[in-house]
Length: 493
Image (cartoon, rainbow, N blue to C red):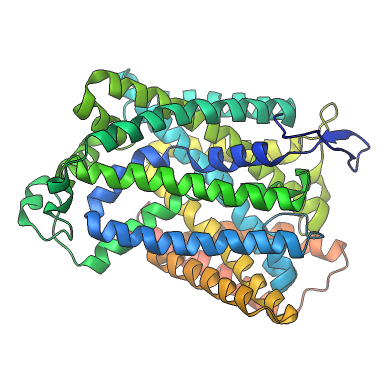
């Protein structure tokens, strides 16, 4: 495990010793958790829905919202160091037991559902070399993806020290080709190309499958795609209990945001200044989705650019997938051990490696395997998984924003209250921009979780009140409605 300075030692609940994470290791986790498949998808996804001008405004809105989220997490980490269960502990502190459970359970769902997107994209890239794997969602792809999933699980089960070391090395390796792409894009900028169709009004783009639409519609489309690449920004907060200090976790989140903002904006905006929007969107529509940045590189500097980026994509996906193998296990373990909102067996550590939560790892891996086995039956597997992942985590972010407002009122801190308002408002806005269909489908997963919440809360001595029963009933109704709408074809998956 890479740590800055002298590692601190602590005794955990099982009496074992664990090296705590420093700022560098936490920054690596944040960057690795965020920089996965998304950055390579982003140019094509944005070009398919938005021209350069609306995309820039989409970035402005998203960066304001994500910055408010990061400032919220930083403030809560410093003001409430006793809430060591990470970002989802704020749901319980601000909205009670049920709020804490929905926040944590939603984050857990987001964590492992997002891994399905990694599996699909990884196999789609492999399929570009070996046609037997097709678009990444056929049966050969499913079998290989399941094997990769279990290999990553065994790495984490072997201990957090080895997993975080591999993760840090992977982060460095995947940033190298991205930096090369940034340099190539900067050297290839054509000012006329960037300004030619700045607001997306030229009919010429119709020939490439990009129909003109309003600036606001284009902005909405760009925001949905941009938000997905920031899922993971809270990684240091989730692992705050393993950090040397809450300040280290907060600083890592701030530095992570700065690095990500530079890399993301650079790699998603500059392609508009190298190729017309319609051309980039056409690469995405013709099955280049997931390697659009590679296509930009190959059409700019030749075949070597394609191979550099393709290798970078594979390393990036595997490193990010490893990060998101760690986070689901941490989530449910903390919910069990610190929050008491699910049964204690979820937080059971390994017999040899006390820093690995074997039960949580196995449950998440089994569910991911089942989901992966369903890929051949999903029409848009990657899109479905990425959108569900985004909506689920936005709920957790929203609870953090609510508690930021509650705490700020208690402490009479006007500026922090404003930050909380911006954070909460943005997350609510992003959920509705993502679409009501995904929110309804998410209710199925949350409703199932109530079977774990109710007995755990009672065992911990919490009396479930009338309002909690009402909320649970409403979520169940929404889940049932989503099943009906899916069966009749109104909601497509």
